[in-house]
Image 1 (cartoon, helix red, strand yellow):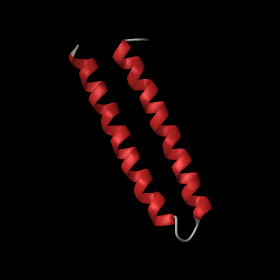
Image 2 (tube, rainbow, N blue to C red):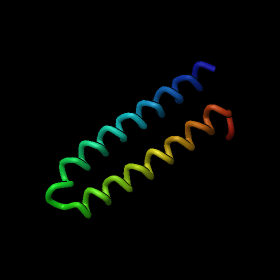
Image 3 (tube, rainbow, N blue to C red):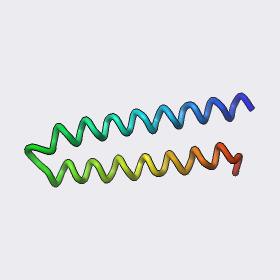
Image 4 (cartoon, rainbow, N blue to C red):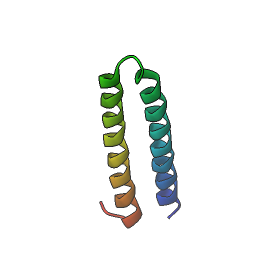
Length: 63
């Protein structure tokens, strides 16, 4: 049970770090290269969705 809580905390931390990094990179690249900002936002979104799915599987204890 303790191991499950550690994995949940790690996944939540990864989601937050990815979201913050994506937002910062988006606003840095947006003025000069809007296509690159959009690409970064899409990649960050895909990572967040994947971490969310992993979080769901860990929370429901799927293997």
